[in-house]
Structure formats: C-alpha cells, structure tokens
Image (cartoon, rainbow, N blue to C red; front, side):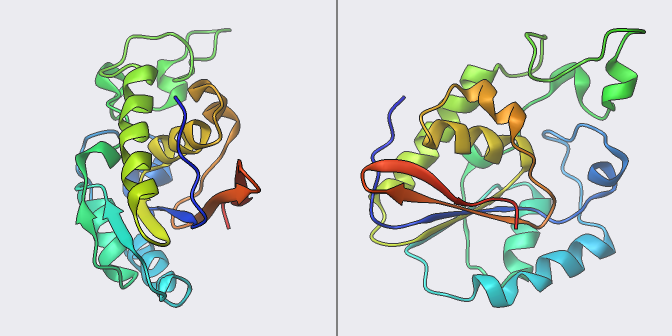
Length: 188
C-alpha cells in the first residue's frame, strides 16, 4: 500500500478521555461521550489547531466529533476513521482477555469484528483523501486507527502500529523528508 507523499502535513488528533479510555476497556464502535476531563483536554487543543486547514475529517463517533468541535475545528465526518471494530473484545480490558501466563494482545491473530488488513484498507482510503487536499489536513479519530494509519503512511506493515502509543487529546504530525514519508512529531 503506497501513499502519495505531498508537500503538506497531515495532523492526527486522538479524541479526549472517555470513561473506557480511563479504565483501559477496548472501545471500538461503542459510542461513548467524553468525560469532563476529556472535554477540557479537547478544548485545550484549540490554540494549537487554530490554523488554516485544507481538509478536516473526523470519525462520526461522538468522542471524536465532539473533540473536533471543542478544538474549534469544522470537521467533515468520515466513517473510515471509526475505531477498529473489536467484536468480542469490545468493552473488555486486556487483563480480562488474557489467560493465566498468556497475555492477550489485539495485535496478535485473534478473531475480532474487523481484521487488521481491513482497518489498514480504511486508513489507505483516508490517506488518499488527505493526499488530494491542497494544503495541510487534520484528522480527528481514535488511538488504534490513528496508529495503524501512521504505519500505513510510513509504508510499514500495519502491525508496526503496536509499537506506537497515542494518548488521548494528543497530536501527531506526518509529513516527509525529501520524497520519504516521515514522522515529524509524535504524541505531543
């Protein structure tokens, strides 16, 4: 999956805190609101994101769409930015999913509601939209999908995303160095 590199940047914004991000529960398609702290985190992004954007996209799930609004962004929703469909792991913690002596990991070949290649395919479509924009792009979404999107952008196997941690209400910048996709800033 090759992504056309353009001279502009793509900024990634993870939504603010939810009750389940706080508790460590896997939150895929469950449409949870932000916590009061999550709302404050999202609003605190406003000065940093107050700039011209050629395109702003957000997941339609309320935690991402609300983060975009509180951050002062006028976002178009894109279903391809929804979080990974965790299927039977939805709402459970890694501890609850682990067997004694065998830690469970979403990155292993486990049956979920959606495969890693399917999520990576959605990310490729979003990146194609971003590459067609005539300037910088901002994407507001969820932890796992943005981590996978970053791996796809960097032309790495999607499972590489397991090594990238993205905190609630943090920003990442993707760009290029010469003709090579590059990570300009991570989780700040």
